[in-house]
Length: 424
Image 1: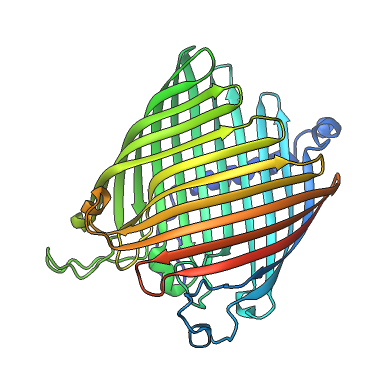
Image 2: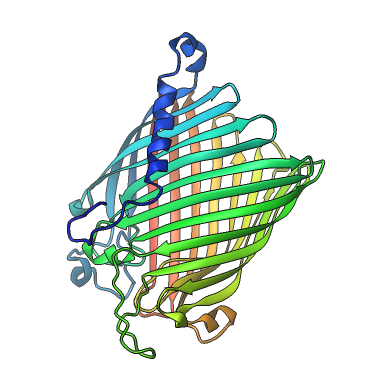
């Protein structure tokens, strides 16, 4: 059991053993036999240092109709911040196995809003395992600790957000034409701000997929997934059946069944897609139950060795909850072009348009009365310049606009950054 100050006693997450095992993956790679060190570590381990300076003209994502003096106690909405990162990456093949890991410590300091100064980290470890010719999979763990976005809070309340993810999956080639896949995943997300700990969530999911594989290694199959979500810092007060005292539930179970495809359309284009029917049932508030369809498709076009374009279309839901919503339905499209201008210069961009429907009634999925609806448009451009083999500079610019039918939920921000990275 674990006990955090100000929270109820909570059971240790069921996938803690997997976190420990995955951390051991990285450590194990460092202690492989010294006799192989010269061959093993040749360009397999990279240490790096990075310095980033950025200017954000609307740090707290305030509406244009909000006075910053009364909302955040400052005359300016924007600020300049610096982030210093130190870290490592390693990629170690060992026989038919492969071990990959990365870690970065990020120290961010603001010029004006010093209460946002923060030291976070981002780490991951994955074992790509292979036994024989027909059985393979991945065992991994990832952890991120950073300040949560102010896009929904829109207030001067720093929220240190910790996200832990663990996963284990396997694929078995039953015959040359049929592949069976199974997986398990766990996610734990905790908020540091006391007022937001009601949104903490633990999600555990299992999935099974049976696919037909063509001689060209394209595949199409049937998949099913069961997901259990729990909000550990909530207590439900039932009240009456028609008027419960609590408007936020403590748990849900979600079943999904669908079709998945992975197809090389031509020599320069590739398509991955999945369509699912989902059924989510909440533990207490049956009026929030939902049945609907989700879809995700990505098409990647690479006409030359220097240019690529990825297009994504999605319709998906998230477990986000607030006092007006039991979940969020997201519909959107995005484009991600990339151009290799020269051997040293790359250009890339991300263009995204999405609609966020904050839903609390199952009829909303099929076009019923809508609650809050946000429309988000975002464009990001990045120029990367490799000045030397181990020295890279990046210049990035982003603009994001959100409009909403909820008063004061809109915002507009521009973010510019310059990054220098040196690797050893």
